[in-house]
Length: 174
Image 1: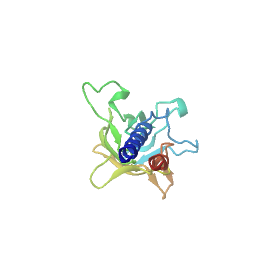
Image 2: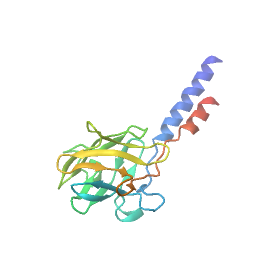
Image 3: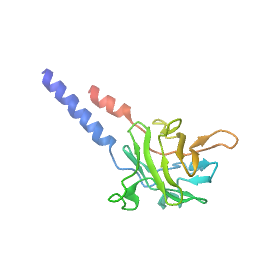
Image 4: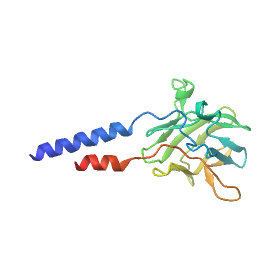
């Protein structure tokens, strides 16, 4: 009897893991279409995580990684994954999500170089309940890129990606 309970719990845990690894929605930034798509760099100005709207080449957040592009009028395109450009064979890079919203890794912009999403003294986090980004990334050629602020001008980047632990917890109980 005990093995059956343990077996069911392990099966449920595996199912939760597989469900949480689902594919990202196409461009899941600014789900309310209210402008929650801008980051700011003092050296480069506004950066758009949803250029071209819902069908553009914007950012897609998934449980394990981010893909797509951020557009900067001053810096051009910033790629969040080598998969965007099929460059993984020559330069493997990407921004990764630990599944809880803690981002790490590097983005690449031809005009700005590498951008670190988990630098010392900074780092970017997605609130796994609200989908709101916070914190800062760092690039030697762009400086700090802030993903949210209240003053002097309020802005933020928000995604429809959220962690759904309650569903998995309920499955593990039953």
